[in-house]
Length: 128
Image 1 (spheres, rainbow, N blue to C red):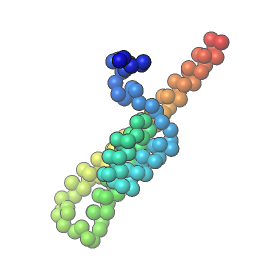
Image 2 (image 1 turned 60 degrees about the vertical axis):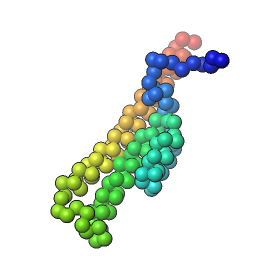
Image 3 (image 1 turned 90 degrees about the horizontal axis):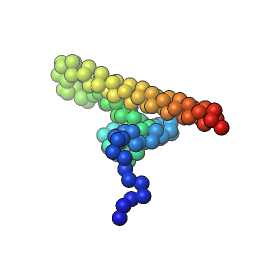
Image 4 (image 1 turned 120 degrees about the horizontal axis):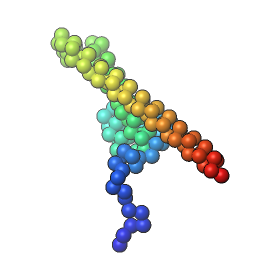
């Protein structure tokens, strides 16, 4: 039995995702930030919006920064770096890049969708 709406082959999975809203972004962000790896995996896999996916990436980047700073400046974890501070800087920059990538890409997609919606509305009003 054929489906009523067959999937299109000319779009990738990223094109078929919905944009979402700021609430979903913040929910996925805090879930990934508070629950670290588990929160990232859950929020990235459960959400089907671009806002949820980028919120999870953004929250995981900030969570990575949080844990690197905790390990680096805590008295309990004294032997983890053993003078290899270049490793600390690599993970710190990686977390910062993940945080910035998630935040900036979500803003780009949100602004692009809003401008496309406004252009579609203007074209609609112009035709009628």
